[in-house]
Amino acid sequence: MTVKSIKDCISKGLRKEALREERIRGLPIVELDGLIRVVQPLDAPATLDWHTIESPRRLRKTYELHKLNIVKHFVIELLDYEMRTFHNAKIIIENTRVTIEVYTHEIDDITNADRDYAQYADLLYTDAIALLNAQNLIQPAGL
Image (cartoon, rainbow, N blue to C red):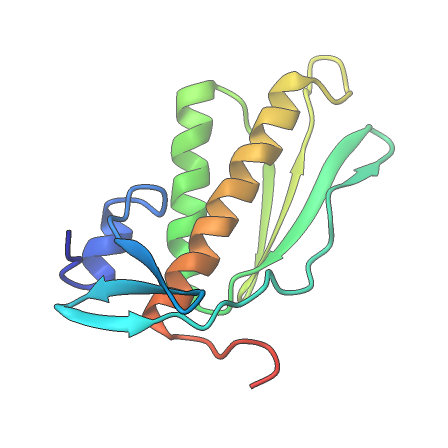
């Protein structure tokens, strides 16, 4: 399936984009706008891992998303998740960096709902990096 544009891809949600991935000489390729592009993999950029913060006890992680349009759609997907699960986090946006703090407010502690939120955010981030790779919007480390 061919994606018509980055806007089309993002508007369907970062987890829902339909990039067809194959392997050629060990490198993934995607079909985009009718063109086949070799994706130079970008390892997840250095981001802070999930940390446990005290008072109240909560999870925190910062993501670097490189492009403001990706930040926008990353946050929209997080807000959609919050609406579906009735579980909210503190989301701080600083240019292309997004910091998330999540905990269960009723007990001021970390629960499975918070771990699920963190896992979902990590999946969204993985998709955002894959989308950036596919669109060649950022250069891989070392090039």
